[in-house]
Image (tube, rainbow, N blue to C red):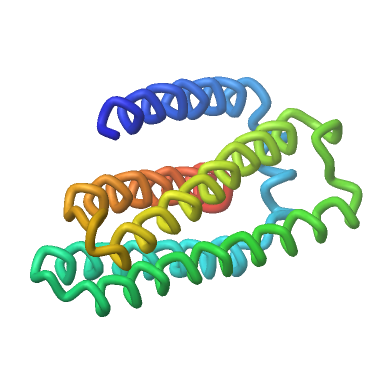
Length: 173
């Protein structure tokens, strides 16, 4: 899992550097386009993912104590937050598209839809991984704390990536 996480960090880090270079070349376009994003929805999504990370981290602690029923509930809570994130981001995308902002609008929106889209893929994959963690916790023959920890590691990566995306797209001026 750590090799996968480090690989993802390198790939996203490269995307972030390219974004910042493009932003420096087209500052006015990026600032004007950024005004069309919904800072409130971005902030809510950030809180939702941070909350999900808290649930999953507590799930790891419960699994380490062999409190598997509680660990299942906590990991499911983290997963439900992930689903809520997807719903909010889908609404936000639909709003942007309805306002005429698409991949083809300009460089800013190309980056916005591509990076948040790749991130959404990671959220969906993270939800699958959390599903595997829950199945593992429910089955006494498969139950391993290392699986819970690996799933949590990936989920925390998803959260970390979103915090950087939020900062770059919504906050940085």
